[in-house]
Length: 398
Image (cartoon, rainbow, N blue to C red; front, side, top):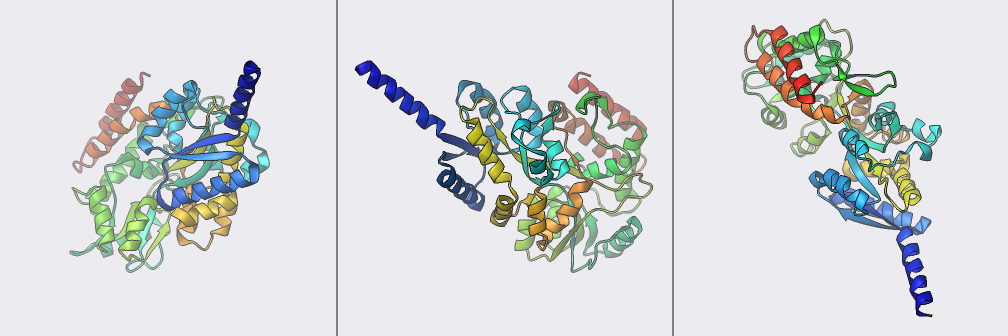
């Protein structure tokens, strides 16, 4: 009798465990409130209990990789940046999502978002929102964004006076400069293999295209005299907030401060640089929802993930925290929001940051190359690029 009761108790406990999913999130404030409200609705309509646990952003990746195989990680994470994807997928802790989604479901998600969460030919997460840099302009000085390089240069130089700057940005940072590399022919940091996967053996960040991009960045300082020495993110951002800079390259993370500073701003793509072969197009960072490959309740976890990434949920998520959705239907609903409308014109021009682990070894040599290029007006660009390529290859062991 006691054994029967014990077995019944164990079965009851298992059923209870299968009727619950745990979510890890780095959200706070209104976005956390939004997630808890979505969890309560899912619980009420689907009967699956959802526990939302706050985990600091910087701890999520390692905690998940180490904990998932031991049964000590959440059923899903809301959200991770797509450049974590390669490492987490290679660790075997992410559930492939291909079998859970239809083409119709994916059709509502911007293609660059789906690409960002694809690794090794498999979809390992559902993209929710994205961010990139864009040209942000102060309407006090710029009524309509310049559409050509000639318009941009004339306006920037006219507005560069003793008390204002026409254009500033974080000139030494590769992330803020990728759009120029892309314009001159560097389509991505790495090329793809025959299966369409990023291949660290195929380094595209080299040669004449990279030299031209570095040359243009150098010209912004010495030829066009727009970005003086000593300008970094803090200086450029501070000048724009103070109303002393007319245009800046920055991302949606800065807009809250610009609103507080009562800057009436607009958002647009940066014009195609002189002599470039392609339009300017920035790195795209995508955040999405991933499911634990070791979850004991994958179906419920996937269903909740799909609910969070639906168009209706992404509209309410945007209204909670201002994030820019990759759901096409959500963007359509929010088309009168100037931030969503502005960045939605930029995202299709962008390239998802490489989501393979080797990308982490690229930033240092790339940043060094840019900073060497802008140190003097006659810097040896060919030598700088060759040394950068050598450093990258050595760092990634290729």
